[in-house]
Length: 168
Image: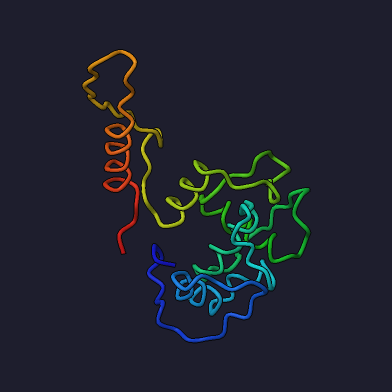
């Protein structure tokens, strides 16, 4: 919702089986108002992993895109379904690639690196040749048996805050 610039000031009831945490409510409400969460039914499953098919459906709805051109069929995607439309849109514009020529991988969990690539592609960001980054941390160790956990964690946390966490 945030990366697509969708307003979170909308109103509406969040009538899901389980309560939505307060800090997520504006974002969930904005997505629900665009009908982007219909794929989850009445249970968002906030503690579950998202599948490739679910992620594609949500992003296509949030983006307001519609299918154009020839529909490509995949063995794991039901013909004529909302999923088929969303998959074809996402593949056609280069957001995500099918796992195989005839199988999209709709029920496969969307893994972290794939999710980053998918989201970068969806919002038009260019990613480098690799999503990994090498970091050198200089640590002074007084004795060989001493593990400087605090210093390492402090440096890792600073790196995460600086380069990876989104600031609202």
